[in-house]
Image (cartoon, helix red, strand yellow):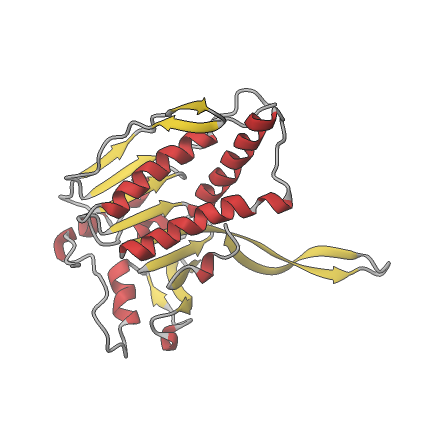
Length: 285
């Protein structure tokens, strides 16, 4: 199952992701995992689990015959219920350079491939995929600058195909591996083009929000879960629910992985969807 969970700040997106079936491997770019784990959901979902938080260790990048190679060293996730790999945004010391993103992308991709190939790992979470996507864009810009000796600060519009393909491959691998993938996203203003009185075309926000990340994100997932905070409560709805179209836009209070799967299975006659299970132990096969 591949789920895009999105919402504004502090709307329970990360908390939902951490309730996915175990063992769970998380890439934390927002570094808000302790709030998600040790908050009000802790007694029900995390107490008694083996949780390992791993500090980021920047790999060295070497260039051999024009190709970049990273020496990635990482702590294994084997034996943990939840393993959180911290990936803080690389600090930019020289304002004229984009640096550190190639190394971090290589680090993340190495562990991600290992998790997808591990028979025991049930779920992987990108918290957030918004920042993972921006990381990939910056990594490609860093690569182009290094190869060409440039100092650009932004990709050209025609150059986004490369990072888009890199992110698509993450979704495709999860699909091929049969793993659960939770991609946490921020939201951004949605812009539309409209003519001005002068006849020129301008881009303006239309008052709605959209997924902040790769534009094809929602084509790659089974479910889009959007969470909003209303009157002090968290309400989710599924603008997209591929497995059960009848459940689209049905409100669900304080959604967790299992409660969402219960809703998706209403009227579903196929195999059961994976669950977190009782007492924090995954019962997915």
